[in-house]
Length: 343
Image (cartoon, rainbow, N blue to C red; front, side, top):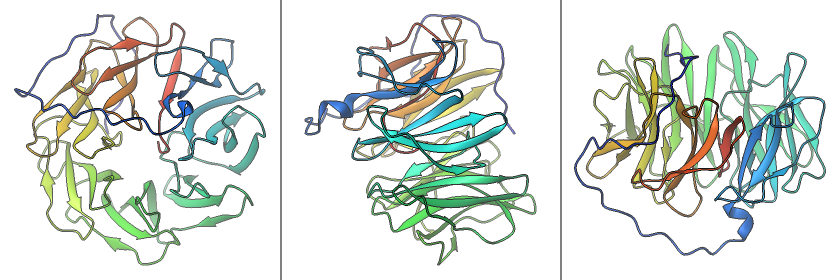
């Protein structure tokens, strides 16, 4: 398993093109409220890890949580009215939700795997999350209003990486059993489980395409960990990157489905890559001798927020999908930026 390096150097932003040319995608007109531009993130600028929000250019930074706990991993609901986050008291991580202004904070579930995938259902009614330990890790959903929980997975094995289909009717996920990890889909009620991948290789971190036709994931089935895509029916398997040394962090589709962002492990150095789905051209979005990762797409344009330790601490940056115009947003330790509704 790939591990993150704990020590990083400092270098200015630069971009390395790994493929010639980029067909830029016109920015879509903004038809949603100004709140949709805001980025939620975690920071310990005041001594404890708390949840903050800020404008897309780093302006108007506001603290939302003020609890005697470690609050991290925020996620916007699709309608931008609520933010889910993970909170640790002692050694236990819990799932919490609050209004977008920090009001009405409410605990939803305990014993969650904090750094694992979580996501809001498209109708904003439920949150899918992972809970458990060791080989007994399962996928759950919780109703945000009532707090009612339901376990979706029942078979033996380590379940993880749940991803909602765009219409909310199904979930993609990974399951590890007997040393192999594969991609599955099931109904949002846990029924109708279907296996999409096969073989002895590792297949992990599935993410549904915006149009609902395909699922991207990470696999080492051809020798090196790369980004793949497969139709939701299990056909048309495509290797989108070759020899990229992709980490297990989820590959994320751009809002228009034309690009996929992912993380690369170059020895002890972690960088962010982009692949264009149509012709598999790829390039580095963020490149430094420091750690670059924890990426999130803007909702309505091809711009990415990410963290980097290139300034000697984990700060937040944004950059265009072409790798141009990087902007540093924070000057204090900050983590896990979220423009969207899934981590």
